[in-house]
Length: 303
Image: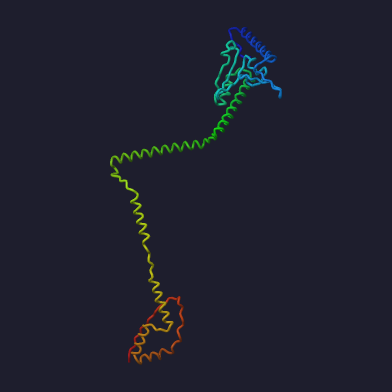
């Protein structure tokens, strides 16, 4: 049974107590197995026997798992979401009030396993393994119950992304620094304003500016742009001149030249003889071509 049975001043007494404890445990188990036990539960299908004692580490009714027939026993219990390791040893068998030693286990699963291994260092391996298995089942039960509670209450659990959380913390720190800078600038501006650095500040209504903008828009809408019709007028004059030529009307300048030639007398006839035969009718010019008016002035000496 290990070092837990070694107590007292003499080794002989310790062995006697250990043997007595073993004899008492065997006697208790014989009574439980063959006679009545209030914690025993038998089922027909499948045929098995269970134990309803809360200190039973496995829930089965057998010699190793019975908490009454073992003077050295350990189990794990849950109280209000916290797991505790209960240890029973022969040294406290004479005091039923202090029979079980209660050790609080950590909420961290790995640390709780280390606590069980440390407190049951010299115990049988099967007892240590059963306590660890019971701890695992209890923690799984707590996780399922918590999920059901969250589901009924409408609360949804979401995984936390550590990178996103770290990035948000950095942004919050930068925003806090920027806010402090803005506050410092605001305080400095208020201090300068009180000192009269900026002079008088007037709060002018925006309506005046809006009115001026509306007037400018109205002036722009009233302004009209007039096109230049000078070139079109010249084109119309040229067209009229061509039409007159085609219709057989002689321009005024040609009439003036004929009058001058008639006054000159015979000189004109001589010039007509030199000019040779008259040309045929003038060809019709294209209206689209540009019209150019040429005037020739010639001086003749009279004989």
